[in-house]
Length: 457
Image (cartoon, rainbow, N blue to C red; front, side, top):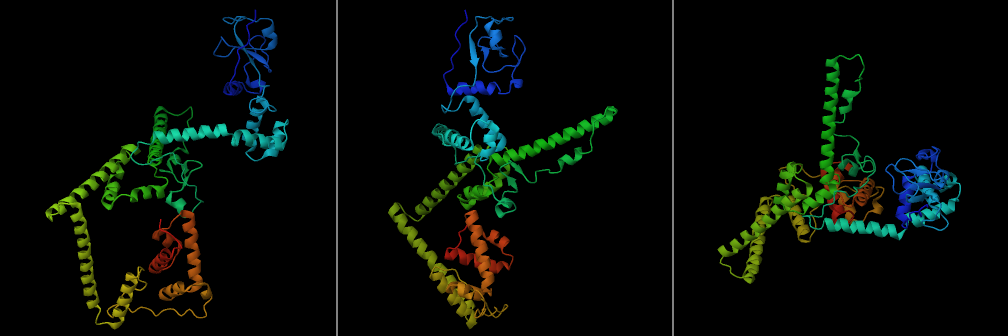
């Protein structure tokens, strides 16, 4: 008596059977009874294997037995002629769609339909987008995986995610140079560490008539090459594990520490390759906590020496200390103005600079004296093209730095565009973009920051 077939009730199990049994009959094992190529449907013994014991319908019907396989064993009917995700699509067509998208590329729906032959272009696109892209079941699964990963990293010292996908800048852009030519899509660098290690192997060829010494020498060269590859992979692993590829994010995390902790961070960076990323960051966090505690203890000791016993008195002490520092700065300013009092032009410039400082603006012109080189007179902008596009503050800047309006507008556009791409701009980046005098670049950069056209990185 032939037992009933084993029922498979889950979609995952059905897809598992399909993945194990390719659609091409030449890729399947032959029938164990007649050695012919198997065509669906065919029979798989549920009690025998591995390897799977497969029979065609003819051999199964005549009760074929071989070694341990008996005709009364449980069995599975292997077929893909059943719906999985859509009643109008069989499992075989589902697999054919996935293979066609893999072969032709996502979006080439006409080529996908031509390869499938049983569905139209619109059917393929609609079915794929509905069940494989916008399927809420897949989306919820990915969301659960993300939450599980966040919960796993919740107890780390800092929010560190080494698997974050780094930015993908355009080739030879400023951000690409900051990332040392890293190519995220290939997880590789344009120029690797020990980039020419392969050159030592280009002329090596193992032939039968090599002497033992020559053969051993070639083997030694290959071993040396393998050790260089291991060193290359070790360095890449350290860069990836510690998040050093995304240099901007690494610098942002580093700048949140006080200056003293940043100095230790720089000194201890060479030991990061010994510790893991989380252990290294915990060490830095522990030192930062110790630094904060020591600073707080020092402040409390200062209060105790001054005879302060309550926090109310401490707040009053801090206000008085701040006012004393301001008075000291005023005395320093007085000494500075006395230094330039003999030069009326320098004194006038100093007063203008102090007025700008008091109003919250950066001084536009430095103090000059007769002892140094005289400043050039302001540039006359009347009649120059582009002047009408400038506001009053921009005209004043162009007059001070002696820059024609057209060049200023070009430099401003370049800096604003780069800032919008990078999310911020540093002075060094601005100097790399504008190939003019560094002092003029600094004034333009400070002016754009002050006016809100760009922001600091």
